[in-house]
Length: 114
Length: 114
Image 1: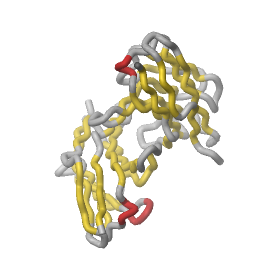
Image 2 (image 1 turned 90 degrees about the vertical axis):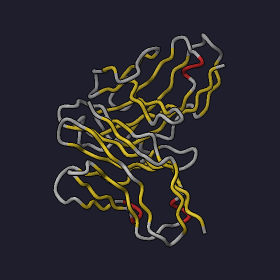
Image 3 (image 1 turned 60 degrees about the vertical axis):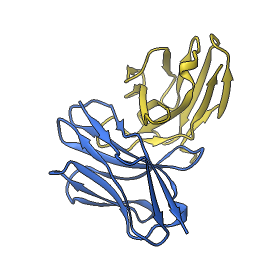
Image 4 (image 1 turned 45 degrees about the vertical axis):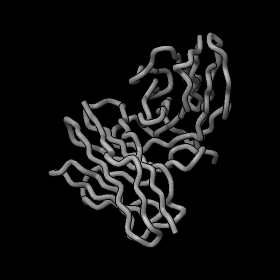
């Protein structure tokens, strides 16, 4: 039982390049989330998927797109990377989308945009 | 609206001494409060949460947290700190009617010294 896995672990991009961050969970969770972590700002929600087939914007969605490929996988795409998107990206999942539900996090992807 | 404040960027404690990491919150409904820990270059690990009921919540690795509604606080505590407790600690809040947004504090770096 691997929990939440993310690939790649580290990526360097040039401004304007595109890439997709992959996330998968094997806990049979219904809800999945993408966060970014920046120094001194905690974690901020980019997008989430309450259940398979649905996605919604979070706090900082601009410059990102997501795809809930199936119940297990939730990908985050940067169409045209900008230096402001340099960050650590975390994927998380929870059994259901309720406010009392615990979210479980992956190990993160470090992204550097030059 | 919801917000979380962690007033201390860093807390230093001697091994064997009790530790407290402070958290205060502001929500417009019933709060659901969480503590997570992040070790270097790792994802966030769930420690404990308050949903309802007993104001003293016990969690992983000997940590506990006290919910105080009148002071809108949810401080993390441990009776005897270990060097291995050194990490970055995040408080987070959700509330009924707040959708799926989990709001994180900015984090407190705990350093436990011999």
